[in-house]
Length: 146
Image (cartoon, rainbow, N blue to C red; front, side):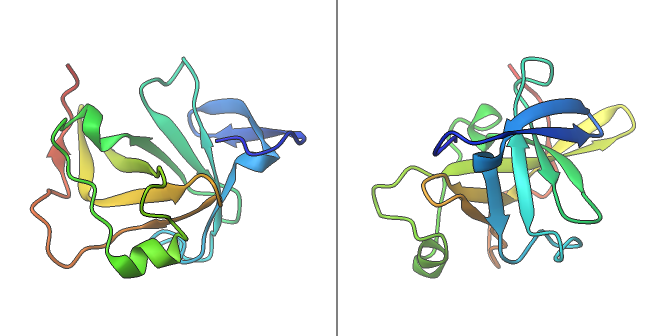
């Protein structure tokens, strides 16, 4: 996701400390439900947490989430954007977007929210969490990796 060389950023998460790049900061104008005031996030990937990505908030209260590409869990996952969301993301019809689904850990189980994915335009480093009114995907899809 790097767009231009810039200074390294030490990112402390609940999953460990990682190095990211300032150019990797993603702006979510609406934040994430429950964390609307946190609008700057960085995606941190490493072999230590693969195939997951840490979505780390940089603004208070600095929320930290695990996320995973939805197609790793459902190869037939249909990525759909409304025309309005495409405009909000400044996404061209042929532009590649990054799709991430939030992981929920409860006790010994894990599930994934396939209904409300995080979508990022890496060209502009802006994103949003989709909240479709009608979706066939579950909020708590069982986490099973092949």
